[in-house]
Amino acid sequence: MKQNNINKTFKTELEKLKQMSIEDRLWYIWEYYKLQIFAFFLVIFLLYEAGACIYRNLQDTMLYCVTVNETSLLSSDFSVVQKEFEEKNGFDKTWKKNTIFDCSLSVDDSNKEVYDQYYNTASNIKLTSLLATDTVDVLITVPQMFSYYTAQNACLDLSSFLSEDLYEKLEKENRLLTAIDGNGNKIHTGISLDDSYLSSKLPLSDGSSLSVCTDKNHPDVIQDFIKYCLWGN
Image 1 (cartoon, rainbow, N blue to C red):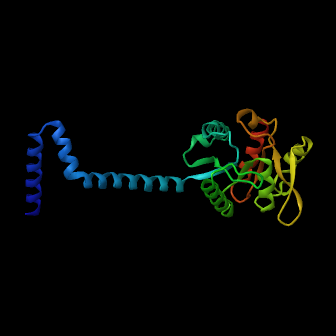
Image 2: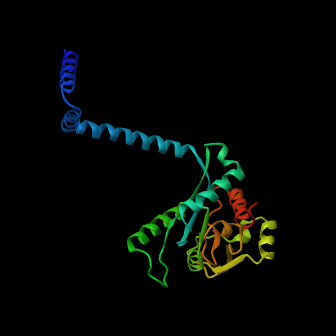
């Protein structure tokens, strides 16, 4: 009986629509079925988000790189570097491996107030949570923020992270940068990107540096990325 009523209602509505002009049909459908239309698109959106979440969880992030206060850098610039690095390492050949390059973060330093306060706070919270969960592998930033994050113990001592050959090569090229960590120790936590391959590809600030934030994910990929940034290898 219920099925018959549904069929009868459907036929009645269909007959009404057939007798209307196109404008009247559109008005009628919107006026009487907008809640159903909203519900339909909401279900589609939720299914898409659920699928995207499952897809991301199945992927292995091989490198997570963020820049802080590189104000001239656009995501379109960074995407070129991301694509090239992925191709060099074969990550583009499988959907299971990906990289994340985020240049959206701006954090106000103690010397100037140039960033919107709300955006600054949101960026700070986001980066702090990413660092606390060992999500960020590599940090690229300007001199003031390099010193700040080293003082917050957010950057690894490169003498204990890098391979001996790579460390010696960087030392020979005078690329190793020192800063004071949270315990008052002067350690190498940065690599100068001046006159590097990366600086030829991106509009980096003068004195920008690269720091390593964790060794818990893919340390070999991080070292490959350092070589890529400096020499394009």
